[in-house]
Image 1: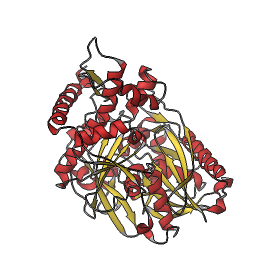
Image 2: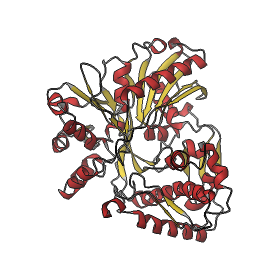
Image 3: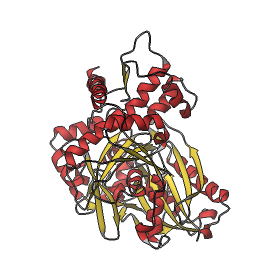
Image 4: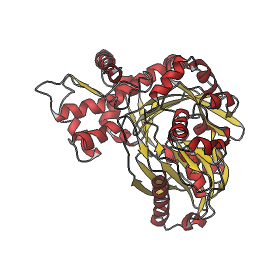
Amino acid sequence: MKYVLALDQGTTSSRALLFDEEGSIRAVAQQEFDQIFPCPGWVEHNPEQIVSSQIAVATQALAKAGASAADVAAIGIANQRETTIVWNRETGRPVHNAIVWQDRRTADFCEQLRKDGHAPLIQQRTGLLIDAYFSGSKVAWILDNVPGARSLAEAGKLAFGTVDTWLVWKLTQGRVHATDVSNASRTMVFNIHTGEWDRELLELLRIPLAIMPDVRSSSEIYGDARGVPRLEKIPIAGIAGDQQAALFGQQCCQPGMTKNTYGTGCFMLQNTGKRAVPSSNQLVTTVAWKIKDATEYALEGSVFVGGAVVQWLRDGLGVIRNSQEVEPLAKSVPDNGGVYFVPAFVGLGAPHWDSYARGSIFGITRGTTAGHIARAAVESIAYQVADLLDAMRRDSGDAVKELRVDGGAAANDSLMQFQADILGIPVVRPAVTETTAMGAAYLAGLAVGFWRSGLDSLTAGKSRRFDPQMPSSQAQSLRDRWNEAVSRSKAWDRST
């Protein structure tokens, strides 16, 4: 067996990568799929399109490498996490479009849960704050709003899953209905201390236990792929939510090690080892992974709009034609010209958790150009990451020595340098930034003995280090102005 196949199912595209025994990428394929916006603040995907695009890129990657199923030791899955799918067990068809993690339709429902005093119980059991971001309220919405869904669910005829579960179901032709602990921990109904679905929380959200998947470790054989010629009988052997997969791919396997992924959103995780550290700074406590019988935890902060702000510059504002153009446009001006961009298109995530904040641009004058807007947009990513790290330091009490980075926007050198300047610590970018897919591949490969030496044989490759260059006083001045912009963007939708 020559390869491990990683399926990296993201928010805007499905990707597949083949890794060899050295952890090197031998083939990559990618395909975007539709983003559906039924109402302001609502985001959906077509579940069938998720599957078809993922299978398409998997077969393309194998074809590029001239490989067959016999050459692949295992399949690992990394996925957009809280995105919610409910389907009919008998037909295998979804009862509704997937409700994406960015979707805010259940914000009022979550607000009522908070008002009713359920926040302490939910945080203690699940490690999460009550928010529309997580899967539980999305499941409840589908059962309450799709005609006949609740009665079918109570009769055990429906199945719920995050995207990993949906892919496993489809790839095994309905033989396996399972998830791993990292994805389960993002639902708001999973007890991270007992490792089981919490019956009291399921009852609170009126979700029948019968629709929930089996919860398994992150590195084991779940079942074999069936029905896809190039994937036939390959064991599916690794599953992790995309951010936990990236933490594993970055080899942040010791307590205190921290990474940030710059994707559609930004996601910072810090390994806390076998301790589930409660947060008092609006972060969440999550399961990092479970390998064999050992469960490890992480602190996490999530920014809803990271790299997606660049997509908006392209698709919404039309000032760039592709994402690669944003760096030279931002560098066309010496500084932001006093412009600050808070990209709260779907509210603000950690550490603010304001569902009613909205995107705002401050400081525009007659002298403001497209370059200033682009620069402010790129800088907004770094400011949001800095807010996360500050909260994480307060929670864990650890002095973060460096920030490991990955994801699409991590390729932007100017952004990485600005990030180091704003944080005041080195930013380290691995030679291979595909750490999400790499983590999924590592988990799958470990389960089938592909990497016989275990974790010690895995390397992230040579890295590039960005050291802080900006005076700390200047960095603080910029952050003070950013904080003022954030405060003015909050509660905007509610006030109208």
